[in-house]
Image (cartoon, rainbow, N blue to C red; front, side, top):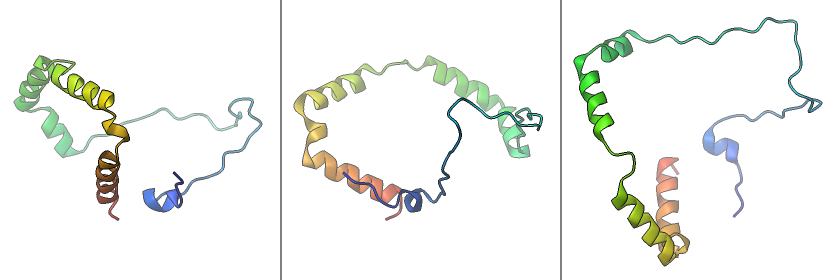
Length: 100
């Protein structure tokens, strides 16, 4: 498979990275610390009692859903992921997701 126009698909510009390959270059500029700021709405959402309820619900969910794992194993064993049916479904979902 050949992928062309990747920058158009994702709407971004790629820049060539250059350097000596010996690690990051030193600059005279002091490094800035990372920072985070939350909107008023995000602060409201994080302070509600629903957050605690949702957190308890998520914590109660199992880490591994055995039925999903078994279904995936069966599809792998049957060769489903190499079938034209799967490839067509995947292509359709990707084109829909990226708006083609």
